[in-house]
Length: 376
Image 1 (tube, rainbow, N blue to C red):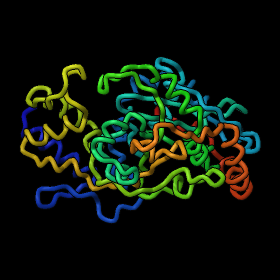
Image 2 (tube, rainbow, N blue to C red; image 1 turned 60 degrees about the vertical axis):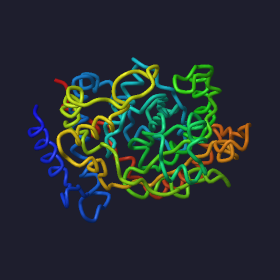
Image 3 (spheres, one colour; image 1 turned 30 degrees about the horizontal axis):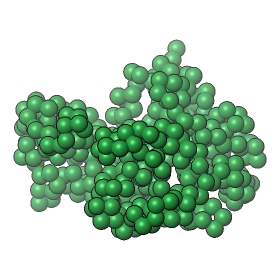
Image 4 (cartoon, one colour; image 1 turned 180 degrees about the vertical axis):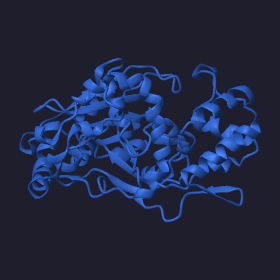
């Protein structure tokens, strides 16, 4: 594909998604309500579902059985358990399948990665998913909250992870279990899994063994302000703290069938940014691929700024997370919240009151979640 063909493909795709062009830049649709934002992401989501079809559709019959219908859920008996997802297992298929139902395309995470299913031990069904990956290097709202300068950020970013997937599936989502899943991301089961996987492993970047202490998780709301994360507390502990909004940059608007063509063009005509040899060869990430291609074909690299802002949340995992990350404290005073304690608090504070005043969860049929036609 030559550069003129690729330019036209990109421009046509952005128009189809609802973006507008003005003074050589792109702008999101006017009055971006949550429904309009879902629509904006819908092309990329549909592409992700279509791409996954060959690998997952043949498993859908058995995967769908792992998700509950409303009559299979007893709010008083819900008993959550975190299950770490291992590669090449049914749990991995379940994680991938669940993430395809999100209203925005879910990435695979970058660098270090931990994935979890939250399962209900009462019926064996999936309640939700948690996906953690490496954080971006520069996130202004996060860095201001911590009080980082460049030196401390470079030294201590390894103690931070970003939640790229976080939420409940129906019918549990109707019972506010998105809050439960968000609370469980703060539990000691997460920090212990992180230490098991990354403790005593030498980092290519820092050239030393990591002590694998997890001090902070960050996440961003999918559709503007979040009703799940705001004011989320465990007893007197404020778990999710909104610290600002993203600038509205990224590459999701190029992830709907465009990225393959963009990547092929970059591999042929663009030069990766120089980096240390031991980190590997090739482009740093998808953003570099898109940015360099845009510039090479004569489009403004500011087209990486799609204008769709997300609220940024920090989730401290210790009483002194901020001081630790600034290098002021050497010891991390972790909260060590237990899954059972968190679940009991959630059940009394949100779950049981919701189940008594709203029984729509009972109407949910897991077959409604099918992505592809039922196999004959």
